[in-house]
Amino acid sequence: MTEKSEGKPKRLSVKKQAVKTGGRRGKGGGKGKGRRRQKQRVRERVRRKKLLEKEGRLSSQRFKDNIKPMDRASEAILALKPATFHYKKEIDPDATQQFGLVAEDVAKINPDLVVRDAEGKVYTVRYDAVNAMLLNEFLKEHRKVQELEKQVEKLSVGLQNVSAQVEMGKSAPRVVDTH
Image 1 (spheres, rainbow, N blue to C red):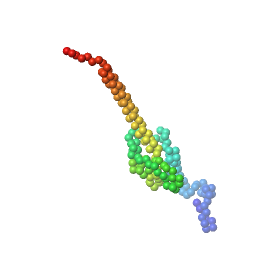
Image 2: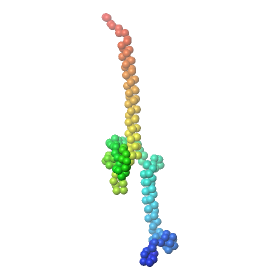
Image 3: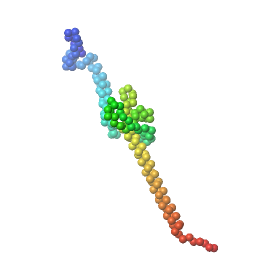
Image 4: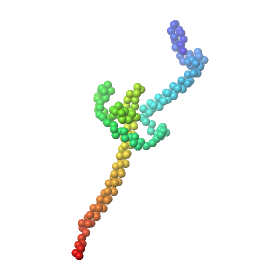
């Protein structure tokens, strides 16, 4: 709300506005409540999103829906191409060698593994998701190795039995039938 004084509009303090309008803020007698609630909801969504970005991903089951095993979804990481690189001088004047992924390349393989900026441009890799996928692939390979070790153990026992039988065949006296 403004008040004219010497030809220029003058802003009233919140207190003076409340006195002048009978305790109501702004015009329209309470129509701003809906807008305030909407703004609060937007602020809450932004707060939650910032929390996710700041804290990484929330891990507790109470924050998640539709939890299911990753299975084959992690196989996309096998197509990723790790790279070494240096950030541009304005980002890292020391030009320290970096190790990682190029977000644009990752987006071509799996768009869910990148974060985009406000304009929709690829911004960064979701390394937390990549790590979870790596763990899934590692566990799948670990199970394969365990199965192979069991097979090798069985084959080894079988080979020992055959070797023992061959040895027994060499040392046993042979009876020649002369009839």
